[in-house]
Length: 270
Image (cartoon, rainbow, N blue to C red; front, side, top):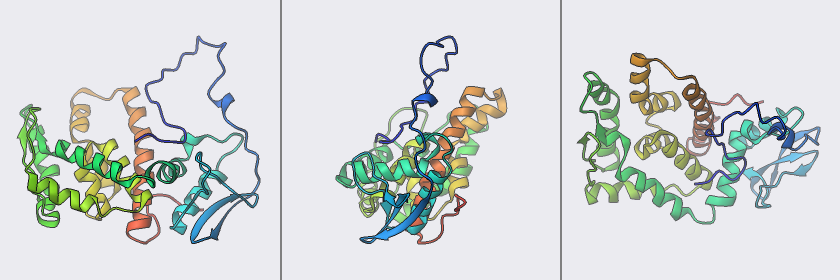
């Protein structure tokens, strides 16, 4: 699912020798407003810049049914200094995606999440090296068991990378729960968690409140953390992981605000 406003491209290298080309920052729009407020209009909490409503790229009002999400977006707009940089506005980008890209066809996004579940990362266990399989059991088995008990979806496990087809009953049960996510922002956030972690099961556990941001992130990086502990950490990979975590935090913030009807715990509101 494309990120409509300012899609992050972590694969573009920095090339200081190409000095004749304009920098990315020089191409960003200048900050043109002084005040940022949130107002309630037509059942939505909308962001306004100098009393004028912000529009999504698709020309819809930028707002949310959640006052907390709207306040978080307002904080992102308020934090822009000289230019407006979408990469520093993860909740705004996510809500833009929800309004312009998800709301019009929830089923497409729901089906994509279910497709991830059919080959979910948590179902594929290491056949070596020694110790990694133990970590998989420790961190992944609880969510597999939770899916069976709480969702009625009993997933099959495989060792190695050979594809294993999941039971039809498990996929039907999981699909039923995904189909209940009808808020566009919550669905966009669940899809983002799915793609960032490689696991629809992790996304569903976050959505249902079974695990929080930190637990989800740790579970998703068992393999990567094991490799780091043995071989060290690559600096480029570290930067990409930090960038992904920003988007993960934004997604969990939105899920918390919409699903649990409480103040997001992962973003300090201003």
